[in-house]
Image (cartoon, rainbow, N blue to C red; front, side, top):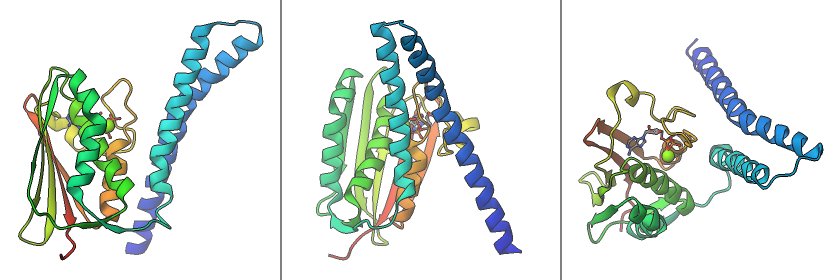
Length: 225
Ligand code: ADP
Ligand code: MG
């Protein structure tokens, strides 16, 4: 019975995910179909093309985020330095941070043990989390990125922001596929991140206070040096 229950829960989760994907992709597809028709009847307009290209980009974004979930096979886990991945990610998001008047501060212990990871996936997680922090701080402020070793041979990577925070009523839904509070959000970033961290035998936890800020804490097993 337990097995059956697990299976039926899984099936309903799959069904929900499929419904979400179908819905999210159908919207831009409907728009694309409409504009294609308009253009077919002789209507030509630069602004049609701009909208169509934005809709295509949205589909591409959704599909590429979902791909991480789709193919966990054939990936190489290699020993990597978390601080160097963090530096890459901070550099990537630097322009966006500067535009929003956000300063990214690091507190990184040295030396830190390596972790066994798929570098691009871990990078994706750090990007998703840090990007959320920047997006939560439209009025600027400081984000602290901290990396420390724990006493039980793990690495703790924390992202601490001074952003809008998450109201308690919504906290439970964070990480649910397609749950977003943003106009142009996909609501996939954290779901994908949870999945990646789980595949790395790690854990990810979010705590937040509305109007104060949000902390995302990621724990990863450390390799013995
Ligand atoms: P998206 O960013 O596309 O909305 P995510 O899965 O990355 O999707 O995040 C889901 C939701 O979680 C966001 O829409 C936002 O409401 C909330 N959230 C995530 N990180 C933060 C944060 N650092 N501060 C405030 N809210 C956050
Ligand atoms: Mg996001």
